[in-house]
Image 1 (cartoon, rainbow, N blue to C red):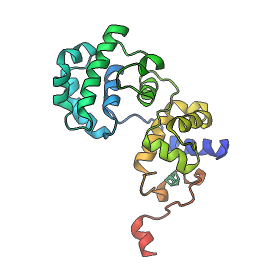
Image 2 (image 1 turned 30 degrees about the horizontal axis):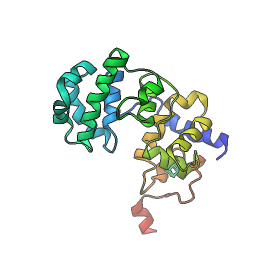
Image 3 (image 1 turned 180 degrees about the vertical axis):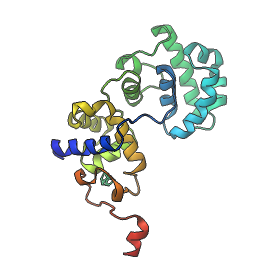
Image 4 (image 1 turned 90 degrees about the vertical axis):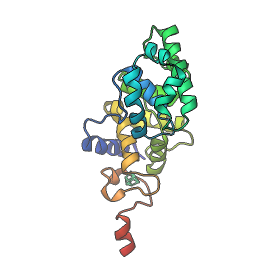
Length: 219
Ligand code: SF4
């Protein structure tokens, strides 16, 4: 995909949703970090349900450590991988207290050194909490980058690097949201809803689905 085409693609998403935001509920960099750490292999809806009660009891690293692993587990049992996640939430909270004065560091290396925090989580926190131009590549963005030709790559890192290069500078801050939301609700894994996709003209996908299934079947 050419640079001009990539720009048209992302601008189309931007115009359709000028003020995008993450669907995870949070009130501070710390609660964002915990919510993102809990969201691996879980939907944002299920994480929001768990954190609604968890953050009522503990929304700071000190309160989380005081709540303890069992206490965290009580709130998050409904989401996938809850055992390991409860352990990581306590360990990362302890590390924030020990090394960062209880604050979430605005620094990739320090973030990725926290238990259970990888590059994707660090990118979300850097982007959403600190306004950095960072691109968190989840399963939706990985698929979309490859399917549309926007940023093909064999690994999430390759797609991330491609997007960082191709997305126009003035759109980089919010591009992560536009692409995730587009992948989640329109450019879906099994059936991309190309028939009402605002970026269709700029998309290189060869097998566009131009009619909803019922109409396709009727044709
Ligand atoms: S036209 Fe279809 S494949 Fe291309 S971005 Fe839109 S929904 Fe995805």
